[in-house]
Image (cartoon, rainbow, N blue to C red; front, side, top):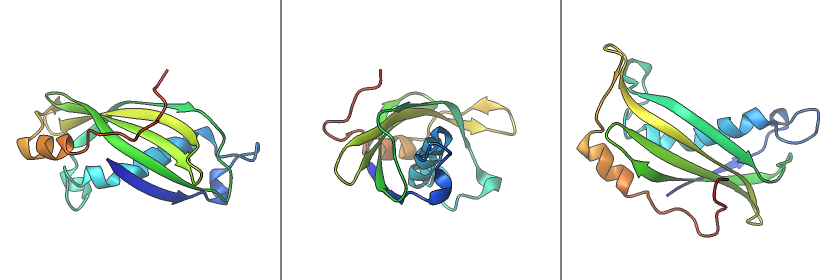
Length: 139
């Protein structure tokens, strides 16, 4: 399981004075950056080999400026060339604010095809399959 603390920025908020729905996906992406380093240690664009197949988010409670939130991420499924990263956001009081996931795929951009996950990456992903207790299930 990975955890990432974020301070909500004023610019994350919209006219309704809460974090805009699109920003939640940015929070999820930022939290996944440590995971990306398994595939590309220095995160160089020249060696990028992972793409997003799908993503989703369920909004449970509003997030406001200037809150601090934590994004918790874990792996729920590992396939031949893809894996699912689950995400949950909670505030400092432990209230769940959002729940989502992303399906990521190891990819060969030159040949435009998926690649099997390397054994060393699969091994590392397996270490992060335990999610937090009490996290809401996706509907």
